[in-house]
Length: 303
Image 1 (cartoon, rainbow, N blue to C red):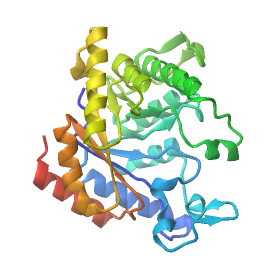
Image 2: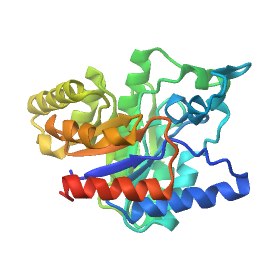
Image 3: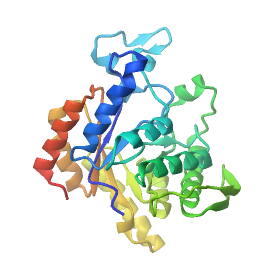
Image 4: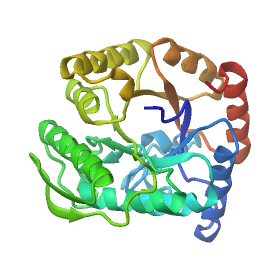
């Protein structure tokens, strides 16, 4: 399934603006993404900032405060709520969370929220799911952070429940960790198929992607990507599923904008169908988005 050749994760909302002005700036960035070479726009789904979007690390701020890293205290919006707003400010790009940790939201609630985003956006929602990693975030907000095995069990349940709720109006499903009993999802999505993406490079995460999802999203160097895509191919062969139904969207993480062309080229050479740019501790702006989008189009074309 084709989800998009070029994507961007808006890794931070740090713009030194008052809360009343902050959304306007974010909207400007989203519109720049919509008007550029990008096909997808992704938001982090966290309750507080993590290391990827920690601009304070580049500003000479103390690495830690009495209450943790300085960047933990920079802005972080609720992802589905902000996606609903950005749906009205964009017209073309797919929009979704990358990735939504399955430990912080019940998958049926997430499916309902993203169905709303799909309706508001005219059929442009996409949903990224992951097994969660930020134990400190969970502790601060009073949420359980189960062992890895249980989190991946919940990931499988979440992918199955989201897929079912997007496809069927009433869903009953018994999972290992999460179940639903005659859950109703109305109104129906506008999209004929809301894509579900699974993030991660673990063997089980890749198997879940190959079994149920529309895309996998490993992040790493070329060898890691190549191994992840090969694992998806093997799982699809075992299942009898057409591997072309699972898009390979490589996460491309970078500290310097100058490194982007080389990293993107490496990802495509490793077998990626598309890339999602993950700026590490880089301040985003409409101008930056337009420039990097133009560079991607010039060097790699539209397809």
